[in-house]
Length: 464
Image (cartoon, rainbow, N blue to C red; front, side):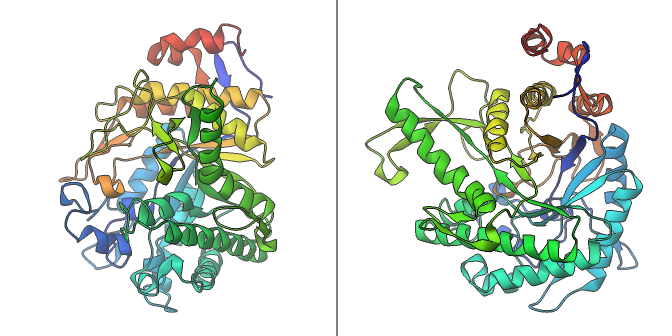
């Protein structure tokens, strides 16, 4: 339980307030991974856009050295908001540009980058794999190749050796279910496949590689805190009174969520990634669970859809929806702060500390994001009141960036980016998040400004 003043929904002491980022989306000049190759193909990215210079964190100076000046300026922006942490990833293809060949100058630059964070009071959370693979690994079949577990463990060992003196919080893999589903079933990520057996194989291998990486990190660094970032969709039965709708929602929860969570806690590889076998090195292979939460989705039983497990998924048309996905007519998600509360409560049953490793909304006008941040954090506070061990929140993201298949037209940043000049302009939501971080909680006065309809819910006696 937390101490709640009449004016602030206070988070626990030592709570981490951060932003989440990823190497390919921020560094720029990545030419040696499968995403760079994918972007060069026609009709893969919205309007043919490419990451290009991204937000220029890995810029090349006139002396042909890597300049971290832009990254440092963004770290300043995060610190000035009152944040005390930042999640970033390292780019495998920079560190190991060819099989077994390690670029120690790249590792040195990452150590320098981590040092810049620490100097600003920003605790680093380092993600070791965030969707991108070196081209040499792709040529070997990437995560369909059994040897990739060995390759990844070797890579992890080099990174921990180089950065471990500055990093305690490690995230092994970002959203293995998304990497597998989008790349091998939906075909919107590389390699653009549409195969359920390949999807299952990739997800299984990533889970096994996570377990190996967890053991590698702890062998080298006993005080490390290691987890992975799981993209958790909260499936709600379309008709809660309908037994078949409830079963349909539970089935999708089992496939999309419980498969990963059971693997990294109990070590059990349940269908579809296994037959219930237990893998010893996967057992208890997380010191925390990273939660990436964006939306809830409604599920109805539909006998006409055997290929989708007899389910139909949709957003509530009466709910508030986010901006649409570029090139599509569908919203990115349904805005439901209560879904974050449900996700946290469900994760708490696994008995592990939790970090919200991503949470955000695409919002071109920044007219939704201030309310989104405040109300989602109020629901996180509510979960803490009920005993959930939540230790930090990382907003996605700091600066508008390249959003994978959606290109540059899905803005999640607290700062707007002028891609021509590189100039960052703070949005109103950056000040909102800054006020919350500085108060270590959601002030009543702020909630009255950005979400007045929610004030009585949290300050009217129901939860206080």
